[in-house]
Amino acid sequence: MAIRKILQLGDETLRKKSFTVNEINEKTIQLLDDMKDTLDKAQGAGLAAVQVGVLRRIFIVDVDEGFFEFINPEIISTSGEQYGIEGCLSVKGKWGDVKRPYKVTIKAQNRKGEYFTITAKDFFAKAICHEYDHLEGIVYVDKADNLRSEQ
Ligand code: ZN
Image 1: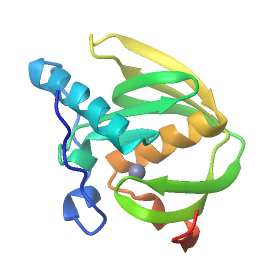
Image 2 (image 1 turned 60 degrees about the horizontal axis):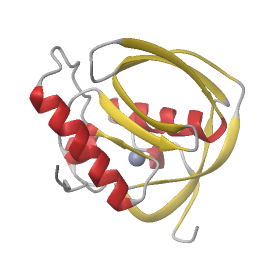
Image 3 (image 1 turned 90 degrees about the vertical axis):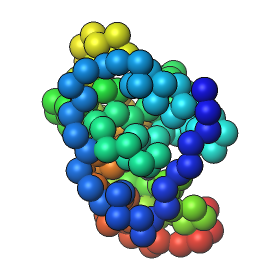
Image 4 (image 1 turned 120 degrees about the vertical axis):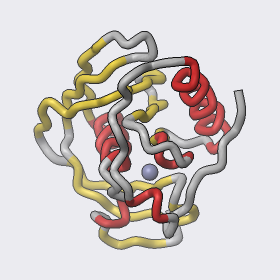
């Protein structure tokens, strides 16, 4: 278990597309554990592997509904709309307003390699969409209005 360094906007790795995880091995588990420690310390709602410099399709989300690990996630469907404030651990001290789906259904693998499907709404859906974007090299500032330094 260890805290990893979170890359900041301007680091070109954040703009790269993450690769599929072909095998969930000890290194993957270590990465997931480290990501959780890193997220806990930073007190964030989510973290993608690329944010700690690992270009793999993995992210974690820690919200009221619980703590979730997503490996090789696929967004199955989205519906509705929400618009509201977002921040990112890779864009320290900034916030902006982003339009997201209100509801999202996502399929992914857990650390045992088992597939699961979950439907999230509201803030949970927002967090999933934000983290999923990271896997595509998208940072929320690309989509945000009113980017500002005050929450
Ligand atoms: Zn982010």
